Image 1 (cartoon, rainbow, N blue to C red):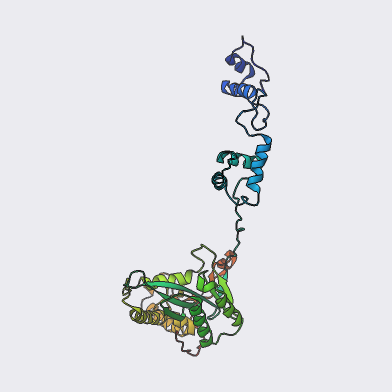
Image 2 (image 1 turned 90 degrees about the vertical axis):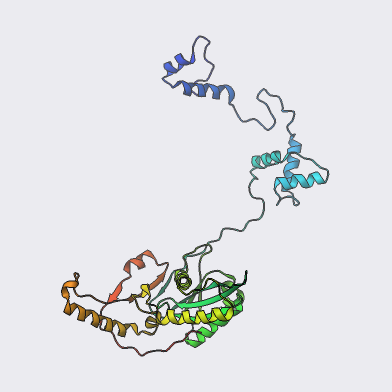
Length: 358
């Protein structure tokens, strides 16, 4: 303390502040602290030494603490305890006093049992060929009947964006998702322990029967983190493509109408949609490997154009871009930096594999 005793009556605060080289407000603060502040007093005691007549006695305070921490009220907030005791004809103290006593004993805070914090790892997936990683989700399609929606299940190959399986249903449950995945695995003859299936945390994706099926088929299950919107970006982007089609009806007439439209859309998406993330190839061309033959045709067309008008290509001979060699979901930064896009025209010819969606 700068001032440990009151100033003499003939010394003003201004003179004292000048003598101590202090701001007058600083001096006033120290004088006030010395005059009014002191050691912390027990509850209910005044600085003059007298006991506050309204204060609870030590026995009463202990009784309140025992009541609040007892088996009956240990999980109840003070306001609930106050009213319940009052209905039983008993008054201990006010609600604020209960809170004050809990704070003094470090018992304040949430009194109910709480779920411990959950930690979910970031899903990091990589695919450099078809049928290594599948990603799927469910979209709701509105109908003209108010409150009635149809569920469109879509399973997509991560590397090629090819829709390998889809289903339209009037309801959403784990039995249908299990049926869809099982039929897709059988159709494409997926070997055990060779496929990772990525999905969000909806009920059909986390049901025990569905997860048990994945275990029987030796498929690795991957889930998005809770309340994270971009852990399944490929499926979300595909549904945006679906709902932004020019002929997409805002509401479907009935199930048959939605079924016909979905069939046309899946066929167009797989075989006619030149995907921007696939260097302009269609999902089926990448899934089947035909894109390498088509790249040769594209390169020949560019070479002919360059031979006729080389002045039109300021960067020199144009080269056809191929699809990314690797596709990631939440890549590690080092892997993202190393990711490259191949270019060239000399590719081996692969046999054409005919695939159909379910």
